[in-house]
Length: 291
Length: 285
Image (cartoon, rainbow over all chains, first blue to last red; front, side, top):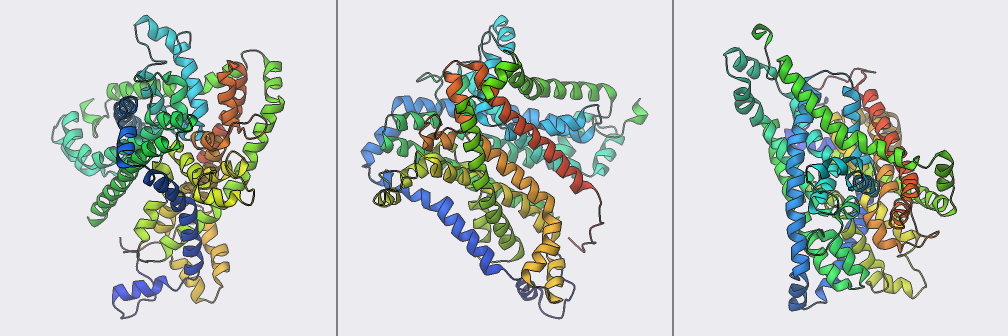
């Protein structure tokens, strides 16, 4: 419950809380605007997709979503998104740790530039990464010497996904790390436990829900990413096509039904992930508050 | 050395390694890409850069992009504020569901977002075919671009406001109402000053995304040069025409907006953390 109000009488807490909320005006207006907007902008467009997919027979639908080229795109999208979000899990944890625990020159700048992937348009990120990792680019030249090819391979997809979702883990872990009480940690250290052990036994148990949330957010974002990927991926059928690109390709073939079938599958996965993350965050936050 | 060691990772060598590693990856993944954009844009000299930016199609793309942002931001400002007010100031059934629903645009792929609008408002969609009878075409023209941009940017303002307004509680506002102020006056004099910076940051984020949206816009725009090309689409078009310097010239404008966004964020956070007026003591949990 929220903080107690000042004019508390003898009324039962729950009823009082309920009534005190209604002291404020604007319930009808604000909820009305919100519901109107949510229905018109977020929910109504779903009906078009439902109707388009409902117009297909089950066989047509199944044939479309299990087309070998499309299935290959699921595989590529899933493993690249997983790789990118795991990388961000490690890098994000490191970055959050360094930003919270240490002082060093340029710290403010690093903290600010972490959000660049959210501020920079994905198409700009795409052409920039493609230029850097091309065989004649600054990074591509170096990587070519050690035999690693990034541009126009699935590895390029991982790079693009990792770039666009860098802030998620950093920004979910940072506040948790900041609020971690030093008492347990200092006690464990003074009792002679090694740093690695203290990190594993004392710090990580309160940190990992935030890390998982960040990785899940990063994974969800990566699954749907389009703009940053298409420039660096090379988009070779069966090799480096992501699912969002498959939808785009079907649209350009004017095959709206096929695009809708693949999109409905993707939408279902994204919505499930969204609800799962929200449930997980709700549970995890309640646990923190409940203490 | 051991005597000074109180917390995990206190030792200078650990600190140096971790900071060094974090800085290196940050430079490689974030700083150099940002530098490359401007380096490429200016690689053929200043005069080429200016002629690229002042190109007729580029100017048109800039104009359309600003126009779209100008329509999108106020709409989502009103929606975000109304939604944050209703879910943080009142309790009603479905409140949790509503706060989850507004995250849909964050979870959905931009291409899927564009497709949703295309299917509904396109020629064959049930709304689109009805509007077609009156010769109203929304897709493959600017209204379609505005609509999908509103969709993809709708969570930003609300997402910035909700945690802050929840944390601040509503005692001050209730006191205002009890003392006889009108609802609108309470909002203007009490709520607005408290949420000002979060609201500004929400607007900045909305604007940044509105200006830069690519996937959803590219599905519904039709990419007609000089007509329905926004700046990010223009970047793609130039890049695919192998006009790399031109593409990066336009990209550098967008990167400039991104840098302004980051600066504005740092500023807003700095203002918020400054103890202007000590927050009233909140009792209990």
